Image (tube, rainbow, N blue to C red):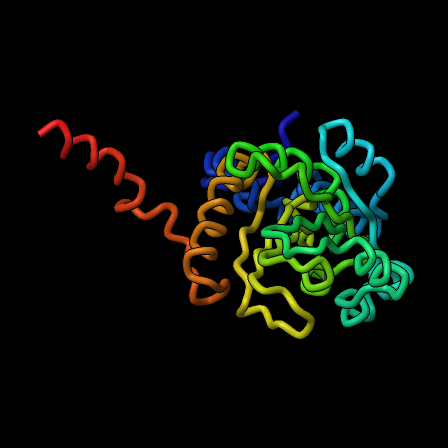
Length: 263
């Protein structure tokens, strides 16, 4: 039997185009019960994503099976509660982890180090870090030559200390982003040149919302490869390095060259 108290929203058709909360309708002066339940579920999923610990052993095994080597480090935040209350502790390595990286540092600087960090959504890291690394292999065939660093209780800036200790020219941090009510598994990518402790966010480039429902792995890999190439040419990252990978002049450059050769 149709509930005559519920009024459908005239924009309902737009819901097929986005995961955003729109065209929810109403029952009297309130939301429909189904929408209230959906909101509660999304909120619970976001909370779980923040508090769920990253299974480091399972991730390391998955990386190994895919042909990557890895090593694990931790920040100074000893547990999840401390991590959430003290962001500063998530930006510095625990003493034992710093010593481990110091001993593992190669004699010569390495061009690129990848850090896979739990951040604010271990679900995102567990689900998307490995597929993204695999999507990057066509651009960086030697990606498997340097161990991937798995970092727990980690903020973005922890990658600066990791990169500094390993003598990296560039560090890429793949990290779980703050969950939204429609995206508890969004992965972020942060690129930093000349990593060292104390850098600020204006020295980084960010690619956000990497997941099948957002920015696809192949597209994220293309953008990151473009930024890394630009960083090597420019000698720095951050606000001075622009992501022009989608600019028409760049997208159609190959086509223009073919037309020129044909004429």
